[in-house]
Length: 443
View 1 (cartoon, one colour):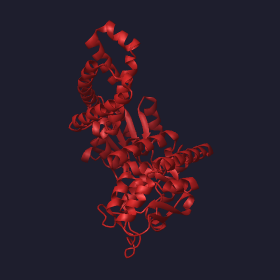
View 2 (spheres, helix red, strand yellow; view 1 turned 180 degrees about the horizontal axis):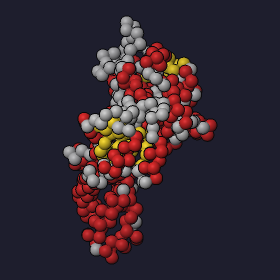
View 3 (spheres, helix red, strand yellow; view 1 turned 90 degrees about the vertical axis):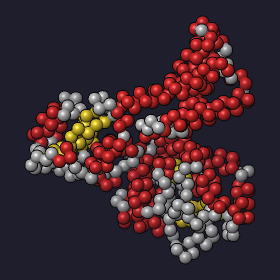
């Protein structure tokens, strides 16, 4: 935002001169007008994913998205200026600033990516161990140069003969200091599976005292991906981790906010509900509302309400099944309701009743929950909080249609449970609005 402000201030100086620009910024509320424009730019950049590191690292995607941002900003500001003409910035300054801001942002993003991906400026990482997390961690680092990390070696225990294949070293802990010096390592990620008696604690402490960062690979992976690696979870990590502890204050806060927002949501959508009901009734046979058993807090089963989006006999022959892409059971009106998330409106009643929260893991059907609990380790942890209408997994991953999808969603759900906070709830809520506006993830 500061960069956009500086560009428009520079545009004012270029058009008016320094003295007149100061007068305009102070006496004509020019700074306020520039802040409004900057807020519009930042909001649109957020909604077009220009703060997503994977997008930022793609030079091809940035110019196209910036053009979309510019167009959207112009439309939004035109509507704003129509309602509040006093907020309009001088036309000449706006045109100069708007033409410069796209160029400056492109240059800034490319400079950011170039600095972060430069091999000499990146952290020189040694991966300690070859546990189940090591391969996905290596893939994540190698495919995302914007993270500013470069794996220079991997150190494997227990001691064996020296291996040079694929840059992997397997040698005694006594040689660890030499490997760190040879490769100028400044960051060690510990990815050992079984650490009992195999972690050279004293050597790692010496390296830490010399300025080398020693980190748990699971924590780093979690920060990079926004999900918890369930394959490498250790019971000790679950028990002593600062996360997975939901305080009474946080529970009370979430409940209070959920009640207030659900009441507001029901009031705001009250005028829309009759039209939705009429559209469902006119286009397909069956009831308007659909209720389904779902698993909630601590495994308690409750009735979840939605607007019906499938045929009334959708599961008469097949029984409980996951929804697929282009599922033929979904009606035409139902598809629109799912894309717009209007089918979720009745779940606000579940929130008022206390069955659900606004943000949390999506409640699963009992048939699937029992099956997944047997197939996936630690699956029951997602039931330690109230399920939500939206959640971290919903904005980060697609609908579940297989056990592998359920595993991936659990990784995101456990990240939310571990790091649950008001700030994370706000982020999920904002991302949900983006998903609804852009029609992503619906099925």
